[in-house]
Length: 324
Ligand SMILES: [Zn+2]
Image (tube, rainbow, N blue to C red; front, side, top):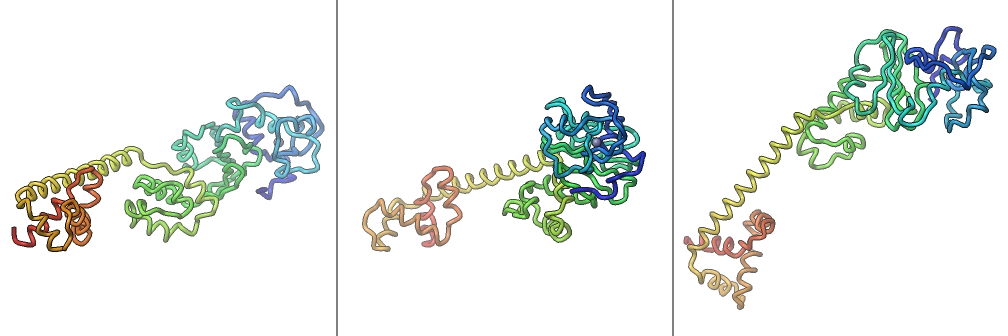
């Protein structure tokens, strides 16, 4: 997206490239020379030092459809320097944040620092060129903000108007509770997410679901991170709950098996005879199948641990029916 307002800019206006060049003290490029005043083909900034486009184009430039001064013949020295180098020694690998205090270069492992910088008040002019892929040149087209009111930031090739920060906080809360970024990005929320954070999800979808598909939603999702400490505690609690249930189920099964031992050995025979089924080994199956009617919940637990409790459970039930 092209930001209107800065093309053919008045003298003294500086693009994000020019501001970065000065703030990071990038020096001079041996490929650049003094030339008559021109507007930079790439960033549109007025300049008097640069290099001809055709000498520069070898640098794997793919932003032809984003250039700001289409009729220009030169690229400014700031753009040449800002887009120079190969990973890891190139600025496109970094998120660059700049205001009058100076420029900071952060990698995408430093999201807490990126969030903190974006959220605080800025001394104008300021810009944010936020890199995710590390593949794109972002700085030359980063919009310059002159206040903190509805600021625009560059997020990869997208220009995003910074919205309400509570969106980032709410996404972080849901991630901490166990929803995934994929679920929140697409709105395809799985049963586990609804189980873990149903009420919070309901209010999130009500208040922010309509922002899905917008730039701020995408950036907020990228910026938000779960609280690792709280997530660890939640996962430990979930593990403990699973263990407790497993032990309770085992204890229950042991209790039933113990009761079943006290049932007369011919109880199963009596039952299969009553059902009119002959072979003794089928009695076990019959009792097992009978479980579906009343003791189905014990069934998966028995299967899970590999114990063949089906017959004793069924026998026990029959025994109880008869008042044993
Ligand atoms: Zn430029």
